[in-house]
Image (cartoon, rainbow over all chains, first blue to last red; front, side):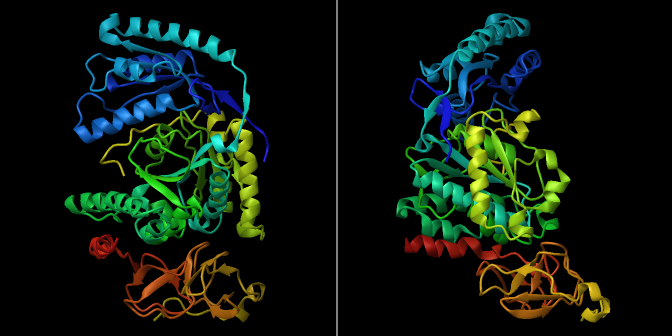
Amino acid sequence: MTDLLGYRRADGRVGVRNHVLVLATVTCANRVVQRIGQEFPDVACIEQSAGCIALDDDRVIAHRIMSGLAHNPNVGAVCFVGLGCEQTPAALLRGEIGDAKLADSVSIQACGGSDEAVARCREFVLRARRMLAAQAREPFELSELSIATKCGGSDWTSAIASNPAVGIVSDRVVAAGGTSLMGESAGWFGADHILLERARDDAVRARILKVLVRLYEAARQRGTRIDDGNPSPGNMAGGITTLTEKALGGIRKSGESVIEGMLAPGEAPPGKGLWLLDNPSLDPASVAGMAAAGAQIVLFTTGRGTPLGSPICPVVKICASAEGVRRVPGHIDVDITDIVTGGASIASGADRIDRSMCAVANGAPTRSEALGHREFVMPQVGVL
Amino acid sequence: MHADRPIEPAAASPARALPRRAVAMDSRDNVANALEPLEAGDRIDVFGRPVAACTAVPLGHKVAIRNIPAGAAVVKYGQPIGHARSDIEEGEHVHAHNVASLFTDWLSSQTGQADRS
């Protein structure tokens, strides 16, 4: 494996990107954040679709996610922008950062309006850029890497080629002392017995079951079923018939490592190894949860092809479907179609993913970064 | 059963006389994934056993490699992924039109599991 070079943070963790993040804490602050994004296209900007009033479970998740995104080591400096009367105030989030990185908070009501808030943010961005530009990459170990594995726009090739190949990479990262996260809890139904068998102990098993029972019951209380609408029409056109089939293929991206624990949305893993994350299947919400849990890189398999990116994490798109690569060639980082068409081994696919992952960790832009894809959706209780 | 889609003899299409490629994931499976689109009459070899497609099967979709009676489990990765809504013939396309999902009693099966742990 290539030497890894990243940005060492005050807390000892390492970023593979050196983002300035400007984060709205409520919808009312979105326009200010948009204006900063237009003025500084290199700045990672996140807008919100809520933040004013939410029931307590959603409020707790949103708080953890916003805090987690700001703490992600790929973020070198962060400015929180609020209106001043939101549920999770910008100043509170800024306080939680402490001295970990350059941080500020702006309240539109306190500073006199949108124009004034934009001026404050602009000043912060210019200062943060100068400071981060002076920072050089330093060597770091694979054990300091935290990856997340995700599949989206899955088809029949995801299960037989790209997910198992990513699973090998995940196992290698875990074996080297690193961290791997797998989310999409609603996508585990039908493969849950395998995850339960791989759990570290009964306490972990009980937490996995609790998450699944909550999702199942929530669907039932709404008069529907957990497999209603899942697999998606695209999954089905790609040969996936049932949620069970999709789940059995989907969990292969987590490899065969022991599952150390089950994390709540936005919760950071308390140790190394493989962790499950209770977060949505909806791609941008899922990746947001992974970034908030500290993932530096997302390994994302697709069969149908998807352009998705993230404001925080490079998303490496891996495709084993010749049809998918043909459909959206400009969105695929690692083409492993020869596993399906030409008899290449799954391990050779894993080697190519490894190489791409290391190059991306060292600064090579992913396709989604080059195209400016930075989708974000806040994970919430009702978002599957 | 498939009067509307007659079985095309393999010999009728000399270019397709060679077996098509398909893959099954586990020796217990009763379905395989077609690695090439199949037409009725195409032959696949799965676990050294020839199976003749009796319907068209799109690329990557599942084809039955055994007869699957109505109500029986459709098995892939050695695991049930659904059950047959109707009798499925060896060689037939297997998808949402003839497979139902398994989630009618997930919670009761899990409650048993939770009690055991």
